[in-house]
Length: 427
Image (cartoon, rainbow, N blue to C red):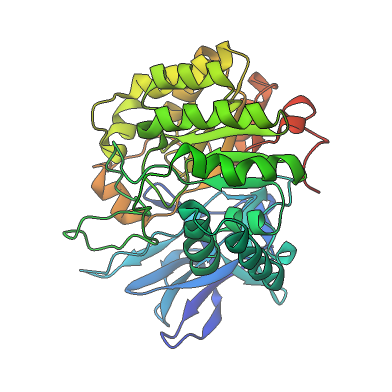
């Protein structure tokens, strides 16, 4: 089985080119995709035209690689809970426009179905498209805005996150279930190249959403999170969201919030999604009841991390220390690992990941698809040769084999799942 290349006519129509088999991209290189890596495009996935780019495939007759000249290349967005193994392979024309901040997984057509090289890395169903009910979300928004008429944070999560950006976590909150978001910081201490909430005016790409514009108070946070922890199934409240800066810059407010939350309820878990830049602050939060941390990074190699994050007043070693502090105090520590085939699965990255796992006693790897134009990203960080690649499947197998206690997934686990990972989750 080898799916055929897809191309777009530039008018919103997609066709298959039966003269070319799909190849995948890893780093800068295009290569055949092993048959076992293909799965049917999951529900909730979608297709993108890649303007100014020609897809690359293998000629079905000659076996040689060549371009598809019939139209623009096509890539897939694969939905949450799935991790892609190969990026779409293409060749850009000179001065091609930079692609928006989405993931671009290879995709093909076979037996009247779309296929992608990916795996379902997570069994939790919390962000399944079929699990959302827009009527329930809108009713939940109405009820919560009436219940908390003066709470700026509830208003932000309702009008911006749930209704405008269709944020899965915000929509789940208004449906009364699972993980509840707590945006808490309008500022950031990193200048990530692919930031989804802020891009300089000099850049040629745009942030996909607007950033939080105010500093929530502890009272605003506690007011709506305590009822969620008391009533939701598998409840989590999470500081740090895509619509804000770095939550650790507001650690004093977060600390006050955790203290107040735990005065009212012992249920559920309290999590922070962060860049991990302030280990001293993390230690203070763990002292008052922070249960888990998720640190986002594009690489566990200092030089690659620094070129992408461009940190202000912190260094790579700080984020590793934050993970270690949480584990030393009995908490759950995850990394939000931006998967870029060819970089993430390089031999050098694998060796660095092994050392991080051993030093921190890491609990979990969340294998997240990297939302970025691959050419633009590699150009920005100045990587012209990504080195020897293991392949994403082999990388995962090797980590599983050496570190069987490190969990693989896509979402922050609730308190129940931290104890019984394979059974206690939304399903």
